Picture (cartoon, rainbow, N blue to C red):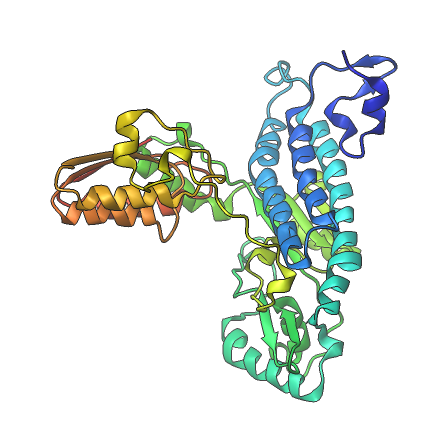
Length: 415
């Protein structure tokens, strides 16, 4: 039985179980449900018990939302192009669903901005960590930023009049610059503001009226059924090449940008009204996840110790433990080093002749793969089943699956 009073009192996501009169809907739109899930990341960052350096979990919210637009919303955009008869089976017109998604996402963005400006930035400032804008640098800091710009940024900037035939695809340097500060303090600067401060070097002799940031998210789904290459690997490689030119899914722009500039960019990039999402001065907050460490342990939550499995309390060796009974390891509560240690132990054990393993998302510096390569060097047969189309980890999986697949004794299968 559903308690309607409890539903009305929930502080988050009433759309998880919409109430119409006294009837509760049985089903929830999958896209709104996903946005509700991402809203819980915002809740985590709002928790006053969470220390300020841990609140860069905001970066996860931004990364999740970007992936959502690049996959789900891009897919809805494709559906909106279907003819009326072809989309009759859809639960709602795709264009209307995108509008509903945009309204929900925009409301979340506003909460995100308030949390960043009113809570996290002041908390970091109280701890001695400040983000500096163009107008808050002293003379020495200004000189430092200018020298750094001329040495590292200016050589990578190329100006061009934006036309439909030469629309630029821009890749960034690192997002933050550490600016010299007094002892016990840390000053950071967004790359955006470094560029704004030095635009007179980019446009010498000209008066710059304004400067605004934009972010264009494009369709990043893998349409493998549309590829006719010989193997899944070739299909994935071809699809990855198309990501930089995929169909626009969201155009996030500075709300202070002049209307004429927005209209011009919209025409150039062939954007529709539903693609335009107003935002703040800064975009791509997923970069917060790579914010430079400021070395203050008191700003981070204490690390939670992993629980040791009772069957491994006396020895970390899995071989005798699994001989006695099957084990269930629950990550991240159990320490994953149990697995990597087991693989390294297997690589060195003369009684082990073969290793079979399934790999889904493989880290860039994968300890699992290092152990497998060690086993390979010791003459063991290693067979790895690699799921190449693991979204946004495809390149890493292709690297490990492709670079080791040609090794003697190493066999890979891709899905």
